[in-house]
Image (tube, rainbow, N blue to C red; front, side):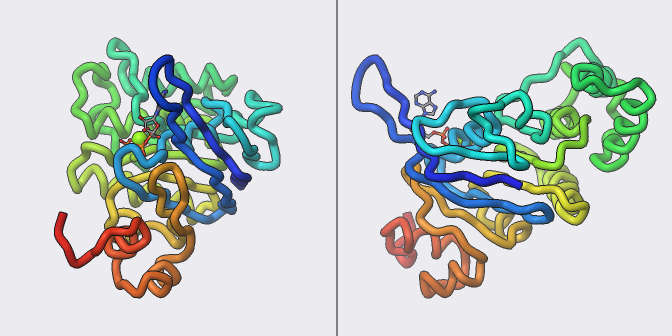
Length: 249
Ligand SMILES: Nc1ncnc2c1ncn2[C@@H]1O[C@H](COP(=O)(O)OP(=O)(O)OP(=O)(O)O)[C@@H](O)[C@H]1O
Ligand SMILES: [Mg+2]
């Protein structure tokens, strides 16, 4: 379970005005649930997810993961989290399988356990064909699957995924989306960010619409449509952001 309470993050630059990247965001996500954070470029998605993944310290507010306060005990909180960040890089000289083994060992897993888990992830993310190839020879979609498998190797109950399908074609996106759906069915807590409206529509019961660092609304799709008098996420977002959905941008 993830709980965010009044989370804010302000970046102070050496020059210019401070940037209020995340403003007073509160929500919770339970086991067996997918919450999508949907918003345009610069809305604050990555900053929000990085705070929840204990990578960034909030300027205000707090978050807990599986009952552990991320700020007081980040090491403990991290054991429960698989965080896919937008800029995860793989070691080019290792094969996908070697990456999984390496991270399994970092998490203190036993060899037998690592092999079993790797086998499971290779099947789940359809990686068989390329898992023995060096990572610097993989395509974007193949690398992304290895990156996802890497953050899941210790089977964390909480998945925080920052734009997991960014730059992927529909086949690779489908593999990843169906993986996320299966993780939910297995009781995982999933928070993921996207700027793809259809992806959020397909996957999430509840969606948080974020703009300028603030959550404009966070509810089920039906409730968001009712609130805005619209019938799709794009129009709901535009209405809440104060733009007229009838005018093409
Ligand atoms: N380390 C940083 N220092 C200063 N400003 C930052 C930093 N990280 C993010 N920002 C600013 O905070 C705001 C939110 O950025 P963030 O990366 O969270 O947005 P995003 O919703 O993930 O966007 P995108 O869809 O482009 O990935 C932006 O104005 C960005 O320029
Ligand atoms: Mg981002």
